[in-house]
Length: 181
Image (cartoon, rainbow, N blue to C red; front, side, top):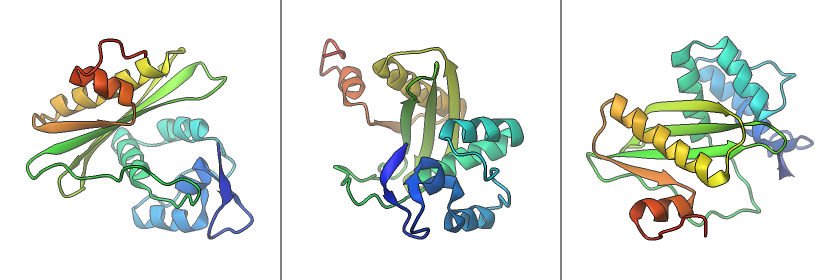
């Protein structure tokens, strides 16, 4: 997926998710400093292929660490201004951020959950691949469920959930009776 911009450091390189998170030489230096000297091979250029490669080549603890750190990567997209910025939960609470992804033409979807404390430190992260096609709302709800189950396994009881799916958030709060509207 192109981000309709060029990398700030690699002037002629079109920016996409893989380049921004894993392939840019500047970003690879950051990964090296984090202990991942050879994260992915340079011939992998699709996010789904990166995730499969990581799943096949990293121990589970390293995979979780890479996914959590990838989630925390910040890159500049000048054309898009976010409505909200990440806010930490109150002291003594944790924030469960969840998201889901569907790729057009693929019969699978990805779920992710990241739990951070009030000081923005990564506590734990998890990703899951679901084979088969699901609706966007169902996948977003499944990602939230993944995050809640992850928190219960740790055991984290005082947590807030953050999701970009306003329909599901409103439904969970009881603000709507039919989240498909």
